[in-house]
Amino acid sequence: MTEKPTNQISPSKSKLYEFDVPWEALMDDKDFTEAFLSDVLEDYIVEQRWYGGKASTIKYIELAEYFKIQQHGEVYYGLLLEINFTEAFYQHYFLPIAFVSDEKFAKKDRILPIKIKGVEGFIIDAVNLEAFRKLVFERIIHAEPNDITRVRYHKGAQFDETAYHSSRLMGLEQSNTSIIINDRYVIKFFRRIYADRNPDYEMSRFLSDKKGFKNTPAYMGSINIIGTDDVIITIALMQELVSNQGDAWEYMLRELNKVFANLEYKGINIDKLPSAAMFERLQIRDVPPEIIDWAGLNVFMKLQKLAQRTAEMHVALGSEFEDTAFEPQHFNSDYTVWLKNRLLYQFQNRLNTVENNLHKLEGSALQLAQQFLEQKNTIRRRLLSFDWTKLKGERIRVHGDYHLGQILVKDDDFYILDFEGEPESTIRDRKVKQPPLKDVAGLFRSFHYAIYATIFNNAEKYPYSKENLFKAGEILYRYFIGVFLDTYTNIIQDHNLNIGYNQERVFMLKYSMLEKAVYELGYEMNARPKWAVIPLEGIASIMKDY
Image (cartoon, rainbow, N blue to C red; front, side):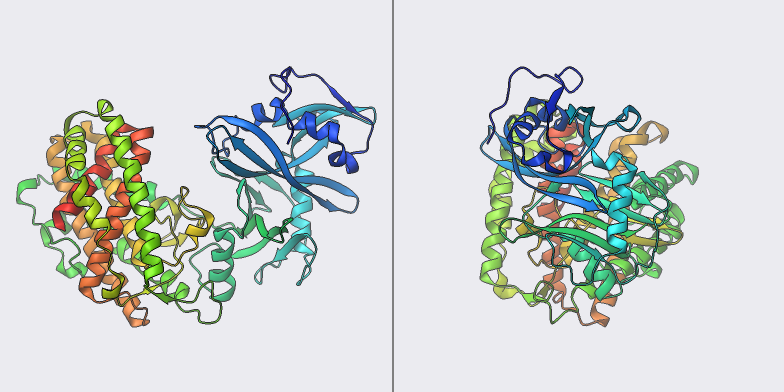
């Protein structure tokens, strides 16, 4: 560990460091690592979009380990940084670095001004350098099938490129950095890293290369490193670039805006709209004509297509009987203990958050929050009601963070991506086999969010009270669920993936939707309290139907 110097404040104002060692040996120089791990690096990291520790205070930064990313004498360093916080926990991040002496190559992400062997320049984040991106891509092109070196480049079965032509940063990301290569591929560099294979890499390679699932970006390659403890750590994943019309979240918001505008356009009386029972399976012909007239046929047909792709994903994930990481399992006591401990801890955290932030709420959100607090013992009992001995379905590897924002819209079809899992979960928890209906529940919660977001964002456009709009939204929500559920269940059962009998399926959906709504509540209370009404309404609705 290196104690932080106190005389540096930012990269632009810090002194020029000088070292009389070549770049290829710089990481072995203790004076350099001490300078690099100073406040200068901290100031740089806390400003990055991919840094996930902004709510905590850095105590110090350690260099956990480093490795060379090189080809034909061209050398870059990959750093694994351990960031220790005053709150007594730590996170690991991947940072590739380069030395550049030409100012025009150091416009972005300067970390440290430095002079090496008499040459002045800057240490920068290497992803901003085209030469680095080209090198990484070429290493994947020429990857050996059974690479046993410390830095392991892998080429996917469908990857047939022979040369590098161009690259650019994709931008607009939070936790990772993605590069578009040759306008055909995307290399995603994982910034927050874990001492294990990244689930996104595992799932992408399994679905694409082993199972031939077509509705996810095809796996093209990856970079893993072998850590000091012989642990495999994923630092990059390459997939095909899927041309698309945006994600399903934006698509759904556009469609729902039309649906709510139709209330006035078609003179619909919300009080006379027929409703459906929650989780009632519905074919489109079962949806009342009043609902079809209001919402249109197209949105229900799209839901059927999305249900089909979701079911096909789960069928692929549940059809492996050789690889133990993907082989289906039944429910058991170990899983039940893990689940209950995890959910009770999360629930208590949300209770504390709501109690401490009630003053931020008003109106129906405040009423629902007070109801949530009053029902805390009942909700806790619901979370404890999970009895594995009554469940006959199977657990499989699932998406884990399945919502409309993780789905691309291409023409009349959908492509599923981003299999990293729930951001709050540990890497081990993300790989625990779960009931497939947990993904479905996450998507249903996303439908709920989309309906309420449409009302929040456009309420002044619709000549109805918010209460009436919410009422119409809840009616529509049940038909969305019903149509999706019928198509999904039929395909799952046709392929003999066991998701339980009807009573079990309904229990699992209610349980998982309650879990997801409680999870959402923490984010909304901390980030945008006005939206806390959405998970609070979800919790109230689920508890009412229990």
